[in-house]
Image: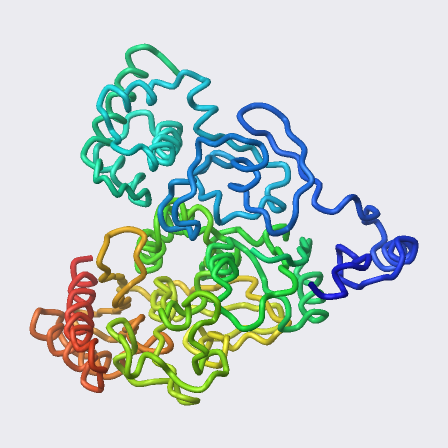
Length: 196
Length: 326
């Protein structure tokens, strides 16, 4: 760790100061109209419809924050390089990979994890069980979250659209043929039952 | 990941000032899908001291058509480019390229600016903890020349030093074929001249310069474009070879052509010979076949990548024929 990072560093231009007062007067002089630096790494997140506030390190990923710090262990880390999608979460309505996002950059975002989808009693959960769209189950939360994001924007997806939407999710047990069946079943159930 | 400082830049000037302060000790982060992987694996000899987040800059994710050109901010998401109705119809090769990049989730994160600025994927270069100190890291030699080079350049190494790592972008060849311009914080560069091979660098960008947008001129009347990609898997994979073609036709004959292959050379490879073959010809299977052969006429593959020559030849042919269908 370099010496510079231990000092008081201006969050707007990176200039470092020995004291907090020095930093304050610099911000006041050079970045007029900008707020004085707040506690570094303070973020607010809406996770599964509940507000949370965290103090995060720059090197924490969104996955680490939610899985290891908050303790929602449904999302799984497998490749940790953005290649397998087992850590998929819905951020601001879009399915993304939480292992390749820095928590510090997620301030103000809305996050939905597999726990939130289960708590809502989403028909996908039952459809996945009914069709046994899993074997070891490690990739399943990622698939369910990606399928939920698909059903949010397309309530009646064709098999082709389902395959395309799940194209980034890997399953080492090769349960691929079961997923479109499960997602179709959930979609049918939602149509019939008027579930959201 | 090791510790680093993190800055949110709220304007291009702020980002440039931060980069000026940190120079090569800082890295820019947009979608993060490339840089975070590099940091997690510690592939480079030097670890970035600071990340400068440019996602906080307003107005850089716009996609609009104005003044006879398509304008995209550097932060425009690959998913949005692939789904954009105007791009799909007028700039087809770009929409197809963006839609074949990585996986659906990564396209919701990755930006067009990041896609053209991404680092190489050579497995020696990317090996964890800087295991192979190769030419591209100011090290002694290229490990691919005598090693496993099945995914390396078939058109020779770089001028300075002999690195054989290919450029992995899917959107880059589409932008070259569509004759796009890359707008940075200080200048405008032809897409074709944007790429450069230097240690730990893939572009001509200076240490305090960021890509802010991309401009694509509206293709002339009678034009059509197409993009094709060959990879082992349909999703997630980087290209083994990809190819973008834009053709302009008048009275059934080709009057202008831009053909660009990627993942076959250290930078996107414009197949000038193939363009010369196809210009003036009626688009048919024989002409496309000839152009494909001309595209790889100068190929000098390594020990394990001779198959890529055949793939490149076929992709050029098929991409030309895909243009003819429109």
